[in-house]
Image (cartoon, rainbow, N blue to C red; front, top):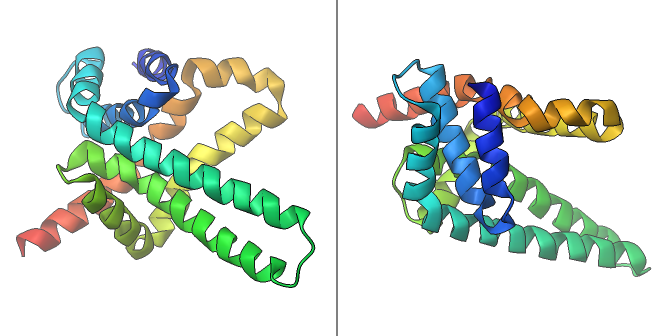
Length: 188
């Protein structure tokens, strides 16, 4: 199941523009697997992919554009030698961290709830700050395997076959707890 899900995810990420929908479908399917809900991996994945394609693509393009601008600004301020350089590097660093935290939750929230893109962005920021320890753990589960594959080229084939999904298999255990807390507080 993990290999199939990883292959579906990677294939749907090949046209970079659909990466957001692929991330959303991945998280949707992983949550269903972790909660042991009946279903078919491929049909669950493509159901979520199709259902969230437009909204996830817009969210992905916004994230990618903002990240590109911030990274360009960081590069620019590293190249100039001005007194404001340290202040701007700090500001860009804070924006980058907030954006990555938001990205960590954005597609996860989109896979579970029906909100507008702006609402998803706002809720992702609020959840990432309110559940900061979960955010760090989820972010680490994405970054560490990628870092290991980059640092050790021998791990790259492993990452292609199961990497994204295997590390993602733990994430639903984390954000499932957050969803349970959010949903129980909303019922009260």
